Image 1 (cartoon, one colour):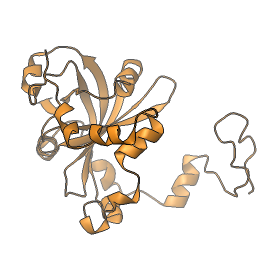
Image 2 (cartoon, helix red, strand yellow):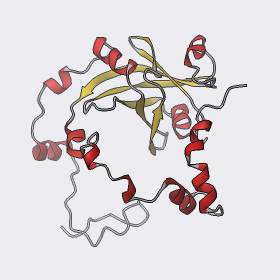
Image 3 (cartoon, one colour):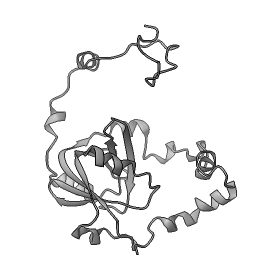
Length: 227
């Protein structure tokens, strides 16, 4: 079908009238197209952190946190620190330290409106990932903050996540992307961080100053010591 009745007019889909497409509008249509699910993918989920889930989190230096505001707008933010930076408080509770960033506070503001969060934990070199879904809250102080100090930085707040579902995800997407294969990497295919920043953020700054900002000295500012 050409276009779609009702598409356009301020609902975010302007400009699609020139494309021919068929929209899926029900789970029945979706299942008919994709096929039946193997029951094992639901059986592997757990409401608590077991041995392998805990081991994975303790060795993961990077995770993604997905949140949504009350109006449904979404955000996915990266978080990284030394392996094990996300602390396991018990089999159903995680704590994620805050570190200095851009101060937009997208994740934190969303949690204040809607506590549901989704997390994906990665370990470099591994194609499988660990997914954790749950409910979150922000805390400004807790006894475990002293155990989250990295290079003199003590977090000002942390995200507590009450685990509701956790399971391992297979490696197919990482294998298709060849994510950990250096032979597939091409970091020079896009503009440098300095050039991107000059075009999108620091538009009045010189390229030379931005190259210094995002150069070797940038790492010095990752963990400003807490007062």
